[in-house]
Length: 246
Image (cartoon, rainbow, N blue to C red):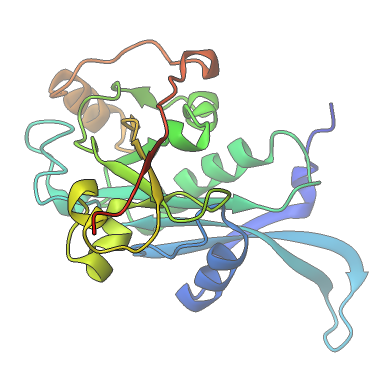
């Protein structure tokens, strides 16, 4: 197993436009998201820069933190925790080939950066989507708290309009059809499409606060902590082909 050479890695804040370009091009979602701060992961190539008297660096990854969805997102973690004291980890991407533990290293280093630069952020929240085959393995490796998959309402539909096409979330198609009800969409299309139920996302929480603050948050957690889920626990949902209603 090849581990990353952390001596060649560094992180720093990058422009949102730079982060967006990488996320849209390489992240599996190919979608941008809410961003309060974006951190880039840089790799020292060992070569001298062509124009500057310094080592050449290559941007190989990005992690994005944003304001969490919902005005009660802080209170949903612990009593007394305000929304502006919480960030959501919304995107993480790293190019392959730089070591098996690089994601956990990057996330851990982002914790340090946030503590030093956003000291008012006391907790983080993130979600892992089983629809993408994810149960939050990287969060488990970096010691997040797991709070199950029943706290965030996302019992909706996924759609695709070509048999071999990509699944699209109902929120994405709503502006086009003015609905994400499969039966109503049948009245608006001229050819068959496919739907399947969206699996509920796994919720993870990480406490950034110092010792006393962390103890207070842990003592006031709104929801219980559960054992980590396994990839083998991922359920499947049935695909249904729907014909248009003329």
